[in-house]
Amino acid sequence: MIPVNRPAAGAPTAAAPAVNAVARQPHPRQQLGAELRRLRDLAGISGRELAKQVGISQSTLSRIEAGHVVPPLPQVLDWGKAVGAEQDCLHSLRTLTEAAHSPEVRDWAAALADRAHLQDDVRALEQDAHLVRNFQPALVPGLLQTADYARRVFATFDPPYTPDALAAALAARLERQGVLYDPAKRFEFLITEAALRFRPGPHRMLLAQLDRIISIETLDTVTIGVIPQDIEASTTIPHGFVIYENEDHALASAEPIPGSMVTRGPELVEAHRRRWAALCRMARYGEEARAFLTELRDEIQRLATH
Image 1 (cartoon, helix red, strand yellow):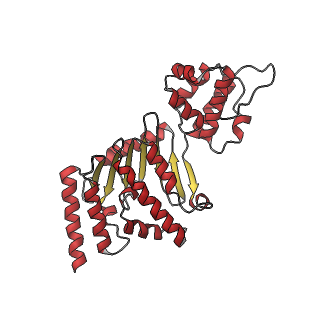
Image 2 (spheres, one colour):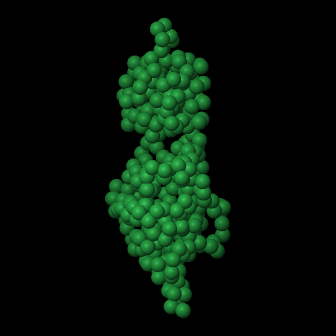
Image 3 (cartoon, helix red, strand yellow):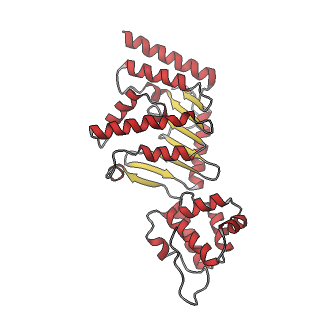
């Protein structure tokens, strides 16, 4: 439970600015959640009652207060008004909300300082989502990688893995792939031709990787779109990103060179959705995608035998 910062005797109910109770929180979204919880407690309103007033489910309210979901600004202001917050408090809530909507970037070295790999973090996002949309312009998505392909990708990582850490990361990535068979989930992949041709090993490794993609594409839980290099572009090709959708929230993640980046702000997540939709218009699906993958595999097979 998040500690509640009680006001001094005689202080106006729910009027204190967002300060002491949230100052120790590590991220703005957690600060925001802690302050919203504090204000609700001060007003003496139950989670069920406030959820009805704000127009959200009780489970969403709990996720907001725990810092797992970042609510849009109008919803935060409705929350503040429902608990009787005064203007200075509403201003503080606005500031916290704007900060919480900013992407969170974690430096690779710092993130790996006390553990071998970050696959468990990604797995938690995949387990929590009911729909995962994954766009990759440079290499095959991790959930589709063969063991050999994944091992060679991990071997190129900077900073480099130790042999033991590499083995642990590989095992964790392969374990993640079991989520593809969960009938309650949906996975959509967009992969560019450049990513399909990326070869971190011999041709036989890439052949095995293409075979796996062709096989996985038959799963009812999976949709794979391929973007040919000679397609007329409807948008520019950005960095890779993943959108994790749930019933009451969504977030987007990316992996720029400095570290991993997670975006929870609704407006920024919606920007990722718009780019996803534009990329989908460039992709081939179904029989066309399978034909493309088969032709590419045949081409790689010819290269491998000569």
